[in-house]
Image 1 (tube, helix red, strand yellow):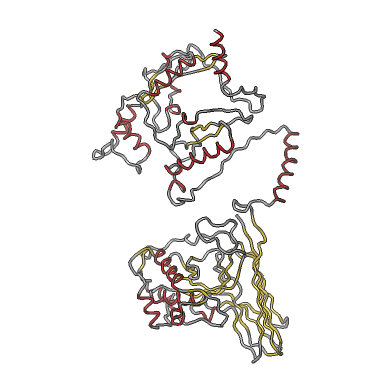
Image 2 (cartoon, one colour):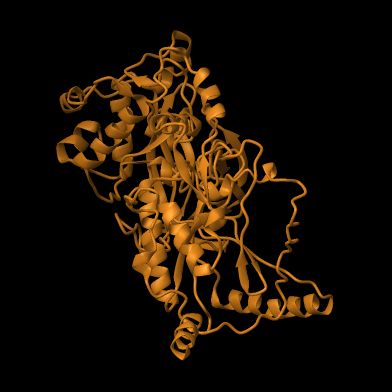
Length: 576
C-alpha cells in the first residue's frame, strides 16, 4: 500500500523597518537517517539576494547557511517535501547480546563514541527524585523503554507553548506541564541519568485521519495534520537509535521525519540567527496534502475509479468473446479475530478452536443472509506446501431459483462442536443407506489403521518415552501414534461402502486387497481421503467406468424442486 504526501511549511518574518540579518542557519531538511523515504525536497528563501550553502554539522544533520548582504524588511522560508508514508514497524530491530535486558552497561569503546549523548547537564532535586522512582527491576530493554516513555506521558500534561527555548527539567516536573520539546528534553536527561545515550530530535510530525473509526481505542486526528515536533532517540547497541515520542507514549513511526538530531536542544533549533532590534510579525503555515493513495481495504476505489474499471470490463469481455477465451476465477477473503489478534491460530497456525468457532458462526450467518434453505458442507480445503495436512473448508450451497436444498439444519453436524456418536455408527449409517438405495450390504467393509506402520513408528521412540502419552505441542504424527496405540491397533476406525450410479440405479461390489482387510494410508485426514486406492486390482473383472471433469459451460437440466423425488415415491406407493 502506497500513501504519498506533500508537506508544505511556510514561515514569514515581517519587520517594521529595513534591518540587517546575520548569517542564518536553517535545519529544515530531513536528516540522512530518516526512515521515511523522502522523494523530493525544495527550499526557497527570500529576499532573493542571498548566498546559499549546504553544510553538515558534526552530527550529520543538513544545515542551510544563508548570508544576506543587504538590509530587508522581511524574511520568508518555503519548504516543500514529498514523503512516502509506507508503514514502518518501530519494533523491527535486533539488539546485541548482552543488552537484551536492562540494566546494561555500554562497552568502554562505545562510551567514548557516545560521550556527547551521555552528558548530564541537569541535576535538580525534582529530576533526581523522578529518576529514583523509576522501576529498575531487570527486564527486556525494549519493555523498560516503553514503560519509561509511557510513564512520562502519563505523568505530564501537554500544552502548546509559543515562548522560545526549552524549559528546564525542574520547571517541567514542577508544573507537570510542557510542550513536545519540554517532554523530549526531560526524557533525554532521564535516560542519561540511567546510563543510556540519548539525543534531542527536532522534526516534522505527520498524522493522517484514519479511514475508519477505531473499535477499541482512540481514532487519532479528525483531519490530516503536520507540524514541527520534538522527540527523543535512545541508543541500543545492535538496533541503533530508537525514537521515543513521550507526548504520545509511543515509539516513533513513519509520521516522524527527523530534521536535526543533536546532544542538546540548542543545536537542534529549526532556525538560528540574529537581527537588528525591531518589531517582528511572525506568520507560519504547515499543511499536508495526500498526492497519491493506492486503494486499500479501509479506503477502496472511488466511484469514478469503479466506473472506469466497470467500463473497461466490457471492453475486455468483448475481446475475450471474440477470441473464445474462457476464464474461471477463484480466491477468498481473509478474516482476523478482533478479540484475539496475537495467538498463533490468527497469525501462523493453520487451525484453532477459536478460529473454528468463529468460522462456523460466520458461515451460518452468511447462509441465513444469502440463501433460503441453504446447506453447509464441511470438507477438505487447500493443502499448502510445508503443511502436513490439508486445511478445512466450509462450503455454503444454495439454489439460485430460491428452492430449498436442505430443510433440517439440526441434522447436520458442525465441526466446531463435539459429538458423542454411538458405537459402530458408520456401519449402521451405511446399512440404512444401502436399504434406501437398494444396494447390497455385503460390500460394506471395515477400515483399519496400518498396524505395521505404527508399530514401526513406535519402535523408533526413545525407551524412556511412553508412546501412549502425547500433548498439543507434539507433531501431528506423534499425536496420531499416541491416539492409535491408546485405542488399540486392531480396532475398527470406520466403514467404507463402494458405490457407483449406472443409469438410474446404484450399484456396488466389494473391494479386494492383497492383505484381505482395508488398511488406511497413515495420516490424520478423514477415512475418505486415506483410502488405499492404488492397492485395488489393476484389471478388475468389471472395468471401472472412465470419469471426466464436467464441462463447465454445458447446458444443465433444470433442477427439480426440493423433495420432488420423495413426493413421487409417496405418490407411487399410494397408487400401488
